[in-house]
Image 1 (cartoon, rainbow, N blue to C red):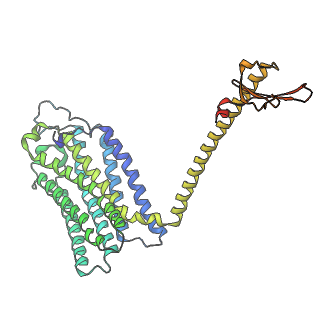
Image 2: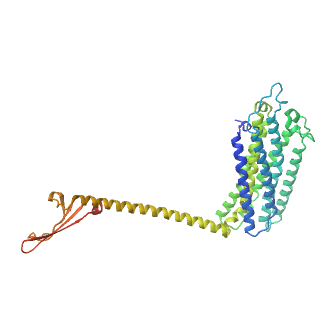
Image 3: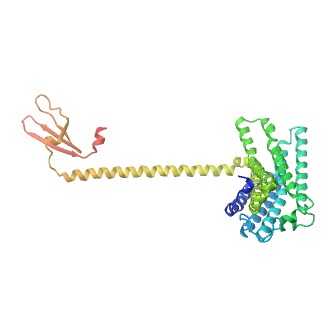
Length: 396
C-alpha cells in the first residue's frame, strides 16, 4: 500500500497535536533548567531550541484548526460539475492552506534544530579537536543556514506574489513559475542528507574520548536517537515521490495525501527537537537536587515494600492466633472426660520392669498428657495434664 494513501484520521492528528507539544515543552524546559542549575550561560544552541519550540507549537495549532474544521483527516468532498484539477471546496482550501503553512514554517524549524545540534558539537568538541574539525563544523553551520533560507524563500515565492494559487485549486498551482513538486522533493532529499551528516559526524569524535566503552556506547545511543527524525524524513520523501507519479496522483484522495505529508512533517520536527535536547540532559542526573529526588523516591518505595511485608506478617500472625483459639475451643468442648486407651497413641512409656514409672499418651488430634505416678504402697496418685496443640507442629 502506498504511503501517501494512508488514511490518517482525526484521532491520530488530535493525539499528535496535543501530546507532542507538551512533551517538547517538558524536554526543552528540562534542558534550560539543567543549564541554569549547572550555572552555565545559555548558548546559541539553547536559544535555537527555544525558537524551534515556538514554531512547533504553531504547527500543532495549525493541525488542530484543520481537524476542527473537518478538513485534515477527512476525505475530499466531491464537487459536481468540475474536474479534479479545478475542483475546490472549503475543506480542500483549508487543507491546502495547512499544507502550505506547515511546509513553509517547518523549514526554519528544522534548520534551527540542525543549527542547535551543530552548535552543541562546537561547544563540546570545538576546543582541542583540531583545525579540521572546527573547519568542518563551520562549513556545516553555513550549509544549514543557506539550506534553510533558500528553501524557505523558494517555497514562499514559488508562485510569485500569487499566494492564493497555493490553496485555490491544483489548476492554479500549475500556473506557478516554479515547480512546487520538485521544490518539495529537493527539500526532502537535502533534509535527509544533512540529517545523516549530523548524526554520523560525532561518532569518530566520541570514540576518541577518554571514557569506558559503556559510556561511549551510551553517548552514541543518545546521538542516534535522531534516527527517529530521519525515519520521519524518509517517509515524507516517499510520499512526495509517490505524488509525482501522475497515474497515482489521479487515483489517490488529495486530502488524505496532504494530511499524510503534514503529519510526517510535524512528527519529524517534534522528534528532532526532542532528540537534539537529550545530550544536554545527560548532566541533569549529576545535579545534587536530582540525586536527592531519586534517593527520596527509592526510600519511599523501600518503605512501601516493608509496609507490605509487615502487613502480610501481621495477617499470618492473626491467622495463627485464630487457628490456635479454634483448637482450644474444640478441646474445651470435649470436657474433662478422660479418653479411652483406643483413643490414645503412646509416645513415651518408661514404666520399668516392675511397671512403675510414668505414662504419657497422646490423643489423636490434640495432645492428652496423662502423667501417672505409682507409689510404693501400690496406690496410684494421678495428675492429668491436658494441652491442646496442632498435630502438624508435633510432627515437626
